[in-house]
Image (cartoon, rainbow, N blue to C red):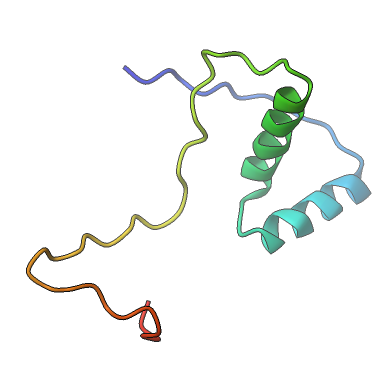
Length: 80
């Protein structure tokens, strides 16, 4: 059973939020995901990340399943 994610209200200075939102966009994350990423990094660097903390949920479009009968495209193939 997956644990429920906590919801919090966070008040930020508008300039800090704008900078955070731009940074998140540059890294193709939502602002919420960027905040969690930064908090986890800070906890890890401070030696305070709980061992029981789950991994960050994967976001975005799921990867396409590779057809086993087809070889993978060459690395220089421009198709995604």
